[in-house]
Amino acid sequence: GPKVLQIPSHQIIDMGQMVTLNCDPVSNHLYFYWYKQILGQQMEFLVNFYNGKVMEKSKLFKDQFSVERPDGSYFTLKIQPTALEDSAVYFCASSFGQGSTEVFFGKGTRLTVV
Amino acid sequence: GDSVTQTEGPVTVSESESLIINCTYSATSIAYPNLFWYVRYPGEGLQLLLKVITAGQKGSSRGFEATYNKETTSFHLQKASVQESDSAVYYCALGDQPYNQGKLIFGQGTKLSIKP
Image 1 (cartoon, one colour):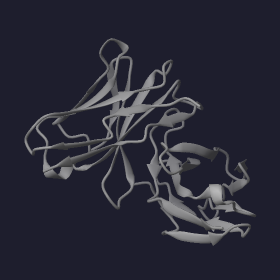
Image 2 (cartoon, each protein chain N blue to C red):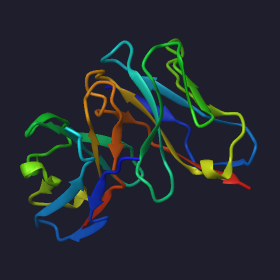
Image 3 (spheres, helix red, strand yellow):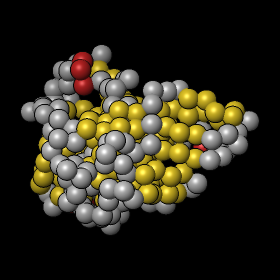
């Protein structure tokens, strides 16, 4: 079936540095999402994105976070600067529509901030 | 806020035995949330197993079933006879925005292992 690819699968970064997590969504999809899962906790919604704009974000989507999808390439989550509490697995997802269409998830990027 | 609670894992079931993974939800922002079961097989991304958007209805897929029970605010996942290939992590989820089904509230996941 359709695949959402996340690159890299694991990234280690020094606290205070910038990190960009990349997501290659399903090719004809228009809506994009990021979720965060801290070890041992639930996956939590961060943000969704459509037509070049953030549509909705949760309180977990701090000012240090930003998302973009320049020119239909990767959908990215940038964290600048990173903090220790940003260590988590970040899942990207995409869907064609917002209503009854299926949402497809990537395998996640494990981010470790040291 | 809205929340989902499911059977705490890990759960181990022998092949051919029946399975139930409990899921209860609390939805304060919407009277009739959409309910989902997602599954993550080893080495794979999360994928939709089944969904039900109407209270009282049952969803089914790959031998699994779940019924949307508004009275007990439950959406338990059941299977009559499990197979080794069902070993995975199962997530119950709630959608409180029918126009935005990518915005989900997940349970903590239940890791299921099937003994051959």
